[in-house]
Image 1: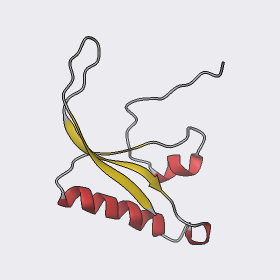
Image 2: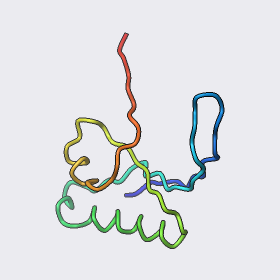
Image 3: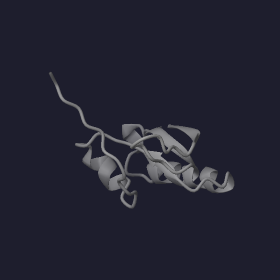
Length: 90
């Protein structure tokens, strides 16, 4: 299963926040049933995301995953980290 959304970020230069405008596909979920893991299904799903992006002329795919998810970290090798989300329990 794949769940992704198309988005367009508008350039923002207000005070200290700065962001260039760009289009992206944000991949919310890519899930493979446990019976089909390590069979190439995940690879084919992410390749489908690449194909959709290419046919739509979108140059960026964004996603996130839990910091301790080593399987996802390995699967998304080649993706670049450009921001981090933090929290603090009170």
